[in-house]
Amino acid sequence: NPPEGVVGWNIAHGRPNLKAVAALLQDRNTSAIVTLKSSGRARPKDLDGCRYASYAARFEGRIVQKMIQADGGTGDYIEDTPPMLGIWNTLLEGTADATWVFQQWEGVEAKLKGVELNVFPVCDYGMPYAYAPCLCADPAWLEANSEVAKRFLAATAEGYKRAAADPAAAADTLVRLAKTENDGHVVDPALALGSAEYLADKFLDKDTRVWGRMDDGVWTDYVKWLWETGLLTDGMQSRHPDGGRSFSLDDLRAGKAGERIALESVPQVYTNEYLTV
Image 1 (cartoon, rainbow, N blue to C red):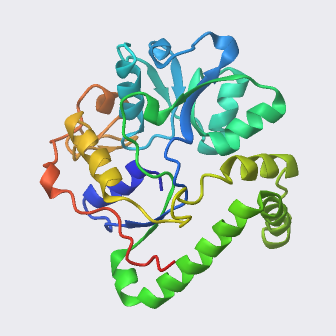
Image 2 (cartoon, one colour):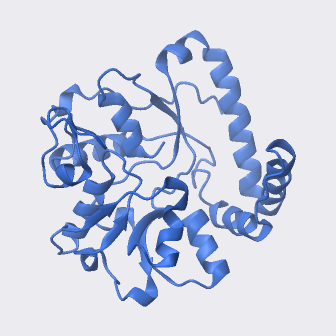
């Protein structure tokens, strides 16, 4: 999950309070809002009035709005929700003006295709973004299966350490296993290699060379930012809003998002307890 998803699990009614158990990346600025270079929309404030292709997540549209406002814009834009797996293509095909991407995948693909992008990294416009993405787990399952969780995360850490040391081998492994273990699915070898090379120095802490471990200050600052900007509310997004606890994406951006959640009521959203290496 992205960090806003992790927070969402911990403040949603009737859902398990999933905890982040490992950060896949230590670099917290690899996701970004992007536009085509040819569009002339060179800064977040240029997204006023544009068409943004959204994943329809609970905080997404309001985070984009805050980025635009932090750059001097009004934050007034159109939030479209195309089919999720086709969102990136809406930008390439010109039916959307902007969208949220991972630079290690869509960003690499754009370079391979010769598509020039304007890139607005999420941490560069007033938001202390947390770890993205994170591995998450149900606390009840973790408590009942702590040794399994520790062994799984230790094996995962070893895999990421190897990927950091030899990105070419990691890319080859991804391409091979995608095909043999996923009904012949083909991953573009050039895309896999470009992504692995981009990520190689972002998996591990630069000082400790440890994978997965999260800093309390990062999560504290992010949750506090969500609260200070008014995003930490109990309203949920819905395609069939009831105006009470569920709202449209347009409502959420307009501030019709339910009641504010008290900062002190948000539980700890992460744990390092199951990271042993």
